[in-house]
Image (cartoon, rainbow, N blue to C red; front, side, top):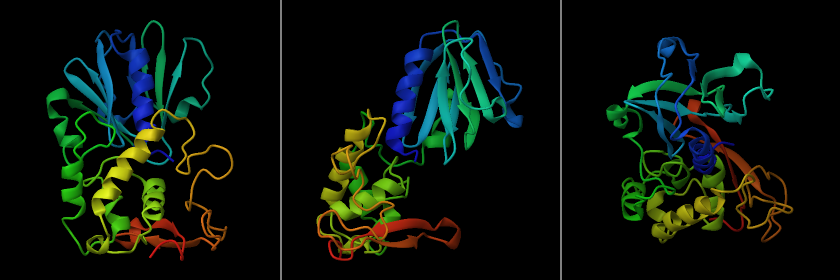
Length: 258
């Protein structure tokens, strides 16, 4: 599941093959931006911000979001693609590499100076050099009555955390996802753990929150009915969201989390 660590790694890989190179092809297959052609422009850099990705080219930024189905692939010229061409939303190529965004949930082109219009709403990014733990804590605790499991998914509070991390963080801190933020003991430790956990996975292809890639890599996520790795109690499952349309799966240990 794409979360902030996945997008960080994607940006790093794209930056390695695009940055400093001139585009020989720019094919954007989204109607609103189909006429945008940045061929001949030099790519300055590729960066991530939470779950958002920005490819900075000259005076423009190509902004994308993977959502649930999207991915970026990198190929040498002439290499067969691993996904069908009709799924390609953007093709960026230089003399050595071709980068393709498949089934991107969001793709748009904005002026580089207007990036704040698409990512300015985001909270602090645990993987950014300007990560601000104090600001993240202030945002997390601003609404004491809100369920901590909802707050952790809110990209305006901490950018990059998704459903895997929200479930695993609640387990590791021993709190139910439904517990109000105001009742969470030492919420600053939750913020610190969030940064440490996602940072430890940013360079891994396979994510783990248990500290191992052998056996169970998650404590509770998608482990409904299976024994808790700590106490043996069956893991419970439910759904939580701000609205009916935003319901997401939650998992917890009835004994380890209160």
